Length: 326
Image 1: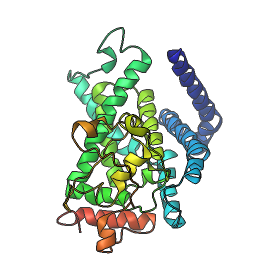
Image 2: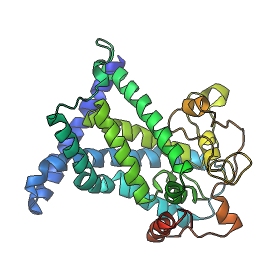
Image 3: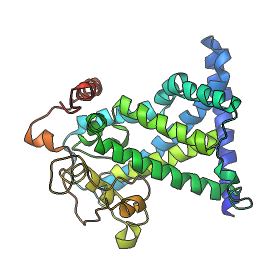
Image 4: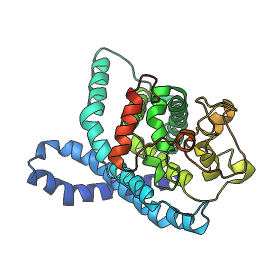
């Protein structure tokens, strides 16, 4: 039954993608003289459709939860509006489109050259014949692998000065809401996307599976960032990352610092599952909802920028500084 549901959802999405592509994207492509890019446009239509569906869910499902049980009152609506811009850039396919014509194309070319030289690609779908060829089983394995890679990436963002110089923009939001997830420096996003793309190629993730993996992770992260007082209980918080668990990751002095020291480190790096935090002893399950932000915003008055371009410029300056922190 579960397999049938997955197949139905896949077919329904494919039908909507085809309808949107044929009725809107194809006429636009020919009108703009870009008929030679229809294959790229079809893939982009998939990302666009996923993004539209996500935004609908954010507004219809998660936003009412924030109004029902908020952690804190909304006092800086303009800061949230900037986060909405980040969300639309990512969810409506603009970032994916730029990546496709630049770095993704380079990665695809590099892997094509490796395959021509006999370089093998490990395919998880073929790992356990009869089991992993079941769609939902292989997808679950891919999901777990991707979540572990996400954990390692997140640890790196908090471990290395120059990477933290970029990632600290994400943590500088003191009015954390469901829109905060995509509030990242674009260079930070490029680095993360490149790692995930390479991993997908190495383990044999198909294009449709990759879109689904990214979409599920994004929606989960939107929920985790929500201004929503919520935990899943003692057991639930150890099975899935809850808003309370992730808010601790954004808490000043907890989420981005080592215990008792003002040095890089932190807790609760998991994206979907807290298992990796538990395994590597970075989990903090405290029942508390602390203020969010970065310590130097409070103690040193560092300006992380109020608008989109200011945030991007300040982040690049921090990245290029000698110690990756100025």
